[in-house]
Length: 523
Image (cartoon, rainbow, N blue to C red; front, side, top):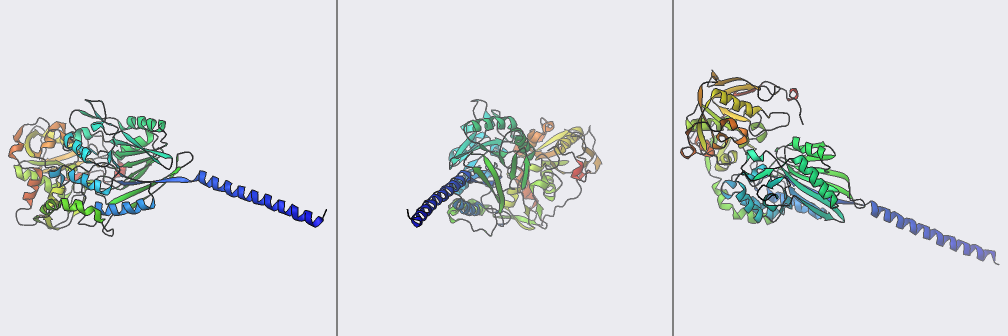
């Protein structure tokens, strides 16, 4: 046998064998990479969006701009869901007349995928909300809002949805503030069940149906969101309610909240194992929505539909020589110049000893610049159209109302019941137990007399026990609502004299615990 021929044959066999091994390795690596590849699901988030037009004098927000960004992100990743974490039907200037119909038109145009209810979805009682749900081209989900007449979820909205992307399943369920029962107008037939217990049930059901990634779409306080994260096996919480840009973590779940009126768009990328269906990692960012973003022209049809109403809202009512602080966080936690102006308008309109309101009724959530004030500005501050009443209470009842108003002050909390006052000067210490926080109280410069009777100008909502002010319920009514203006009309009158208004913070409310660190952190 030819040795040279044997060497060539052996070499050929060895080369072929090496090629087989190389191809096997290549296919093995490719198979491994395919096995290890993640599916990216992008969640886009907004919450507490009451206006479809830009806010802050056109500098921020605007759903036409949001639509532009949504399309850009959706082009990059078709596995994108757009979520809204509650509060859009009310309150707003337009909703006074339209009861939220304009916002449904706006969300339909933007292409929202899912929303849960906020407490303000129930401001007009359940009837109008049922109509808005029928008009929606997107899905509503809420697991803990139960119709006691049927035993089912309100308006038969599903408690959760399951979406599948490239073989992996993502479950999303909705939760709503239990306090909606007293802070809004859901009526006697709706029950708002415990978020934690509901969440545990939802996670169990979703896991049983193969959804290993679970998203809670919530309109809860941060404290309640943290409780849900600790008690239920959720992977991420998309939340709302506070009107503050918040990121937190509890249990195994990150919690995300934007501010309000689409000033930001949250982008949360879920990286899910295609092999196991489980969440591998999360990436997120907050996208500023401002005038640098051109609005999508598709949204113009919504703006044209409501052009007449928008023009009426631009009519001037007067001027202010100072910026008006209508920001939600401040009006729910401290004295503000807008709180003083509104409480003064109540007291002046009904000629009472005291003007009293809940800071949560101030809704503009903006610093309104000094200068011309238009109808929209006034109605954005007080959009509910609450009728005023004049009631008579004892000094003891007045003190109890103040105690209730500051009872929920805590680090990170922005209670809607916080009192804004006229004719009263009081101090409180949030380090003390709720019910014993109010210290010195004066009415028109004189120490509060607990047995004396005082007249109070307030909203019919508070006088009826709304926002937990049960101590006012049943008080003698001296001026009934049919003989009183509504709250925004009383405020308009403050601008009608021809002179600029100039409200200021003047020490009506003094907080004695100057550092919030001194208060117990119960979150």
